[in-house]
View (cartoon, rainbow, N blue to C red):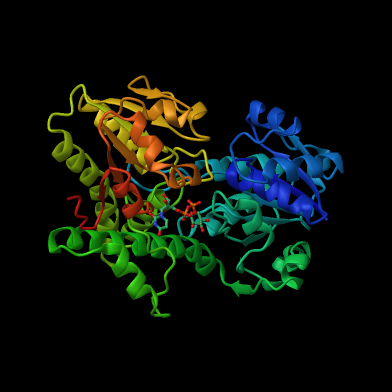
Length: 435
Ligand code: UDX
């Protein structure tokens, strides 16, 4: 089938490549000339494992092309996927203006038989507004369906090619048929199809992210309790996770969640519920956000407890991306901690396997070599659990630092091994004796 993908960020670029891998003829469209040039040259403008290789493959097969605006060719697509961003506005709500602009650009090129497929994360009710806008601009009743995307950064391509569910919301059931044809291989491979009305499909995405954020903040609230009760949140998480009704996934305590989705999506969801007059239903999500932010503060407190006055103290932060296998710095808990420490006067060195090129912050010293970053450090903070840092040799690392104290912000280190190499280990939600 012929497909256009509008918006080539994390979601759109991955979706374009995935659709081409499924054998479709794909045209990716983005107004950002540098993004389009980069993709045409086979370069993904962000780090995502496996995506560059897959892009090279589909470019070589002539399955995908990229352009900065609609053309005769993209106008003949059977499906137009809307993948533009919905960033957080100043008041916490989701800014849907890029979707409006995408609709306005598409309208003059849309054929009545083509289906517009929304994938962006939106406040419930957005799809109807977009459909009405499209109808007004085209003068015909457009086919619009909603198909939220659940891919995770770090495993984006795999998630797109083996989705754990395909959710499709439609105003008229038959409008979704071409989409199901496009996804035939995924459905045949066993991905379950969930067919819904449009508002429910819109809600599935924000509800899923709100639930995931809640799980993480729940375990981090337990960490707060464990810290004062002399308990161990890692053991607690494991113990409750054996209960299949709870499950052991997304119960990793630490400095909390960040990224381009979870923080913004819960705030957007709260804002939408308030608009709809049911703000109380989601008031607990404000606490989820609050718990998340308190964990970052806790690391600052622990650093102060350890070093006293932070001014002039040399601190090394391992990892600044919001999670491993990504170079995304948006809402990164680790980066926010590094910045707060620097603002308090500490001399902060940050290191990261992938995210340093995208970081411009004059207060932080960027060092790509981890040994170099550790040299002379008076406090080390593990902020992002890249494999490189999990596998660090504690003995060698000790020989590099000035003072062997580490705060494990992700509860991933082998505490006994680090202690026996002479380190003082401090972890969130754990009572660790360093005597
Ligand atoms: C998320 C959703 O998982 C995905 O389905 C949706 O499409 C987009 O938003 P992503 O932003 O890639 O994906 O990150 P995710 O893997 O969910 O992690 C989010 C944050 O939570 C990270 O900062 C991670 O470090 C943190 N996290 C995750 C924890 O602190 N503890 C956990 O147990 C799991």
